[in-house]
Length: 115
Image (tube, rainbow, N blue to C red; front, side):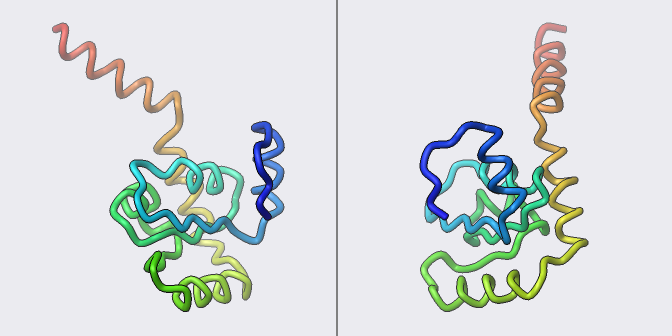
């Protein structure tokens, strides 16, 4: 589904109902969409590039973003049923990147810089 611009609640509903999120980025600085999917319990198929590997770790299925056959294979794997353990790993992974956790880390860094 190419849903276009949606509100946050609409995006969350789409992710909760999706068979999976395909994130075929070639050049990514940080993978927010995969994290948003993981929060909603949506399986993730992501490009095998450093940024998505760092963010998703073992919570996603990976493919070479220049290999259509590899992507099709991961999509078939996902459509045969998501791996419940990977979904739980995804939820835990997304928790590590929460706004409150990020704020706490930044606050601690600023405190140490001023001490």
